[in-house]
Image (cartoon, rainbow, N blue to C red; front, side, top):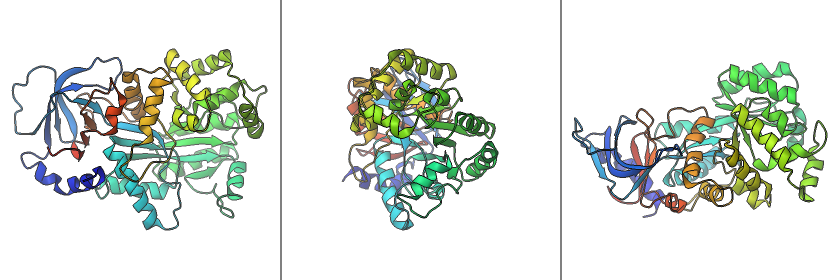
Length: 423
């Protein structure tokens, strides 16, 4: 039975599995990898109760108090559930919603069996994403928890898009795709986006540095995150960093800071890049240190860049890690619908092999950093009181990240939602 079919069957007989006590699971004698790269892995036991981490014990257990489902994890490894911090689940063909949901449901099932328990969706159709999120939360569909963004850009960007893929459609006049012309547009647009259920505003294109700063400030005022591309043409990367956004996506975009002038024209900038624009180390470090000073996360999307022959992304990310910036694992890539390996693992391997992150730092990027960049404080670490989203691995991920390709067990909010073996 493949993992997706096994996942579906697990959801059906899950209640029988927890006949002893449906709200308590004890994971005994595993090597615990906390999620914080500064914490040394240790052998211990984890008690899950009512969807949370009730206790973590690094010495022999004396008593549980009441019965629990016990899983012997001797020789196995426990990590927090993984997070892809840059996906797009609501940007496909949505004309037939039933078909679109069937496709997305399959993708989400594959995400979950590969240990991805949370995703940050970086802009798509909000009603579609809200429905997908709700169905997952109700247990109607197996998948990760979804947090999503509204995309803000200048009117010129949406006119360009309207003349192409979606000719005749005003793409800038919805709560989730919003054209911003002036500061007066910002406050009501963010209020509309918040009503649509977004967690953050994705600041995308065709915006001045003044509008970027205004959007960021107002998003924070209304309790939302502000996420941006590295370059918001015609604004330069330094303009984006100095606006205090929470994250900047696509490390390759930071190279555009070294183009002369106060603004950059998108066509000319990319033409220079494809002609072999050489990375200026001094400008790069100025840019990265500004981000570090402001606590801006880097969402480098190295796998995306490597597939598009953008070698600067790995070089910039390596230096970002050396300087101590917080890095997250985002793919911005197509996910398979069947039982196939996922691009998040490719991103993780590149962060280790080309960007110099240690395996513990890669795991941190894929767990607690992903949570924090999304504004989540309830997950991403194996600590008492945190949400019980975690993985049991058969092999040591510190020796090979391939251990994440097939988690032995996936636990989401305290429930076993996928398992390679009968427990």
